Length: 477
Image (cartoon, rainbow, N blue to C red):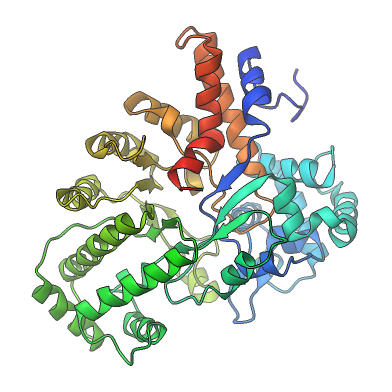
């Protein structure tokens, strides 16, 4: 029987162990998509206790922050909501999580949590209800006194070279500017352009948001669709000046419905008057905006990312009570592969298709995505169109193996840009280690089975590439 999470954790063959320790283990991290706040990096926040890091709490505006993966574990174990997003003392909240964790056998949360305890706090036991007090005291003492456990310390000891945050077009990027001007910060932090609210013409708050976008570019209002695209160009260029390497679009599905400028302008005017727009009208507007954005991304060398097929806030009662991103989302089954291809094709017609990464929350889309890639690759860069890493509910051993196996079967795994945290926690960099072990085990097994030669030079290039080098090239680091 293997020991739990020893140094060969998840490395099931001698080849896997060699690839991991020789080529993957010490590679830098490019965390090109996450949700950590840049202000906390600049201010080098020190957390009071482990519950703050893991379970979060309430923002000043009443919204919630924290790891909704952990919240779902607690809810699934029957923990009352007052211990999850409520006002119960942090020690009691932590106890409830610790008691729930042993039930998470087979869940990546079990591995992530214990990896974080081992890596950052030197704890070699396992977290459960009985060890909660011991872990609480150990972690809190280190969080309060260890110079390596401030926000910057956590990033530096994790060997993170680049962080791509997620930022609204109207953001002033003041904290990014301060980080950029601080010579004591050795890693790069860049904003990512996330214009979801501009695209959500059929959702509440659209007109109010467009007023804020107008103010961000010094206008009283955005009177027409050309004003909207001009404002977006202005903001994208500002983001590019601040070092932006990527955009991100979190859409229910990717639309494609062609329309003239005049048609789209009429739809926009209708929405700004507070009138309802039809699904067809919304898709025409969204397509028009996405094509404009794609061309700007290509011009400025910014990667375009699409995250889709999530059905959000499905528990109406709890979503109303707590708001979005609090753990009430699920995999959706929207079918939009043809629309994705049509959008890329429209951009390709004028040679303005940007580097693009496509993620679906539904693993059933993996094969379709794998075949879309091959239709739009070109000589600009190896792997110009990417199948994004296993996302969210697929971010586990099975999901990662399936995503990489599908990519390998239909494209070139060797050009994959690899893992990201997609996290709100500064302890989540261990997820890169988790991914690298799974990667090396998968490749190692192919070599052990005689499906790929034991070619040291080729294997080194592939493993190092997927761990860091491909992302470094792809995002122009």
